[in-house]
Length: 150
Length: 195
Image (cartoon, rainbow over all chains, first blue to last red; front, side, top):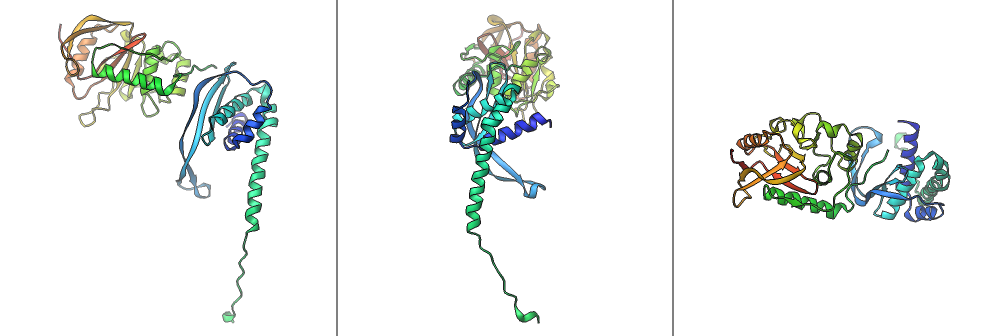
């Protein structure tokens, strides 16, 4: 896999997991929204999420989740695709636009700085908050040494 | 690289095209007008493109005739919108798209299904210029009275081949003819009168 496609994979992953409100707020501030044509309008459906225990062995079905996908094309022919969590068509549209802009060398750095990194930080912060909340309820179990081994 | 869009309204236009194919199959040799057509890359015609978008998906191996297979934009369009694997052998295909009927392979070289699974045969989507009613006499299921039907251009021995196709029943191919703004069907149950 090339560096560019690794980078795109990361970007699409960030967009897929982003909070719709956070994404639309960041997109509001983006100057000069590009014109585009639809190739595939947003459509919601189910995908089966599969996993492997410990990252190896046979795959098992973890469960179904709702996703929305769409594809569009900017006026210069750049293809933007999105497959995002949830049923928000608006989120899918913005994600596909961000994906398209992210592929244009002129916009890549700005997209990364203004949209993708803030989203990733927000997600990391939310995870950390949840981890901290969970850690506060942690219970330590102690076992007394029994004397019958003597 | 630029990619052409598919249906503008996939649900309604897809249903419209499906209904058109259904009516054409139920009444062999009748001409069904089709509206809401996608703009596919040449040389695929809009009606043939609408049929492809409606029927072809990742489960249906697709065969393209040399004229269509040579067009890279078309292959990209089909890959994106239909997602069908393109196969080299007509006999391995569930659907075949044919832009140049005069150069098409004989009907017998496509998948004909088996006695146990007659549904595992190829459906041919053939692009023609238009229909006329001076062809051979057709009769069979779906036709209350025999009627004459023809399309241009078709290979000179096309109707003879179609009689051979009928002899294989329940095996055999089904043919969809796509004119510029309408379609007609020649299902395997059709009986073609000898000249």
